[in-house]
Amino acid sequence: MTPRPEHRGAGPRVAVIGSGSWGTTFGKILADGGAQVVMWARRPELAHEIAEAKRNSQYLPGINLPRSMTATPHLSEAIDGATQIYLSIPSQTARENLKALRALVAHSDVPIVSLMKGVEKRTGLRMSQVIEQELQCDPDRIAVASGPNLALEIAREQPTAAVISSMSLETAEDVARRARNRYFRSFVNTDVIGTEFGGVLKNLIAVAIGIVDGVGYGENTKASIITRGLVEMTDFAVAQGAHPETLQGLAGLGDLIATCQSPLSRNNTAGRLLGQGYRFDDVVKQMNQTAEGLASVAPILQLAKQAGVSMPIVEQVKRVLDGTMNPREIAPHLTTDDDTPQGERTEYGQAGSGGALRRAVERTLDQFRHGGRRAPGDRS
Figure (spheres, rainbow, N blue to C red):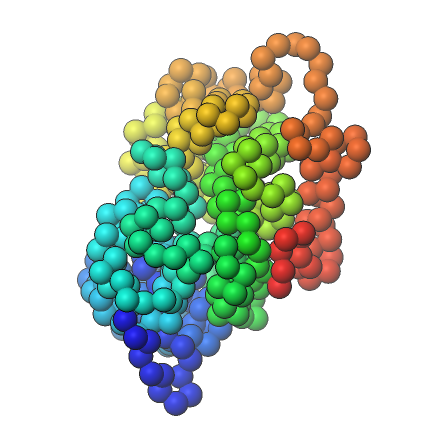
C-alpha cells in the first residue's frame, strides 16, 4: 500500500478503524490537528452519518465533527493512502478484525496505533502483541496510546494529555506529532508494556470503585481502593517487565484518577450496576458500549498468578462478577489474608522512604502545575 499523494494544502491522510465513542473522538483529535481522517464504521448508516452529517449521534450526541473527517463501511477504502492507521475496536474481537486488515497492509510500513485498552481473554496477550501476531508486522511499527482520556470530555475539547508508546522512539514521536492539537497533548515513551497495562489495570480498579459507589460507600472507601489499587497496578506491571515510573504517569495514575472518578467511565458504570445488585449478564445487556475491564479481570488474574503477584482488589471484583461475593463486602480492610499489620508498601518501593505511591502523586501534581511536564520516561 503506497500512501496517496496529498492535495495541495490538505493534511496527511490517516485512517481510524472503529467508530465508537473513542475511535470517533480520536478521529476528531487527528482532524483538529490538521489530518484528513477517514473512519471505518462497520454499519453503513453510521458511516453515512459521519460522512454527510458530520455527527455520530449514538456515541457522541451533540458533538459536531470536523469537515476533514469522513467515513466508509469499506475497510480497503478507509486505509487506502493512509500514512497512519489507528485501531479502536473491542479487544475481544480484535483478532477477527485484524485478519481482515492483514492483506491490506502486507506491503506497507505505516505506523499501526492501538487505541484499545484490554487483554485478550483467551491468551492474556496485550493488544500490541495481538496486532504483531495477526498483521505479521515489525513491532517497531506498532504504537499504543493511553492516558486520562474520557471520550466525551475530549470531544467537547476539554484539555488533556496522553502517552504514545512504541518500542521505536521514532515511531512514537511520529505518531505524537500527528496526535496533538490545541486541546490534546501527546507525550512519548518506549515502555509499551507499562503503557498498555496501565490502560488495562485502571479499568479493573474503576470497576471496584463503581461497585462501592453502587453500594453507597463514600469517599474514604473510594480513596482507599484507588490508593491500594495503584500499588496492585504497579506490582503487576513491573512483574511483567514495565518500568514503575510509567505507572506514576499519565498512563497509570492519570488514567486511574479519571476513570475512577467520572460517571462517563464505562467501567465505573458497569461496577455501579453490579453494586446496585444487578447480575453480570444484566449489566452487559444494559451497557451501550463495551466495558473492557469486565473481560480483562480473569486473564489479568491468571497472569498475576503466574508471576506470583497478589491482587486482592481485583480478586474481589472477580468474586462479585462471579456472584460469589456480596458487593457490600468489597472494601480495603478485606484485602489482606490475615490481621497481621502490614506496611503501606509496594514490592518496588517503600512508601516511608519515598516510594512509588508518594512519588506518583507528586509527579502528577507537577504535571498539572507545569503544563504536563513529563514523568520519567515520558518525553514530549
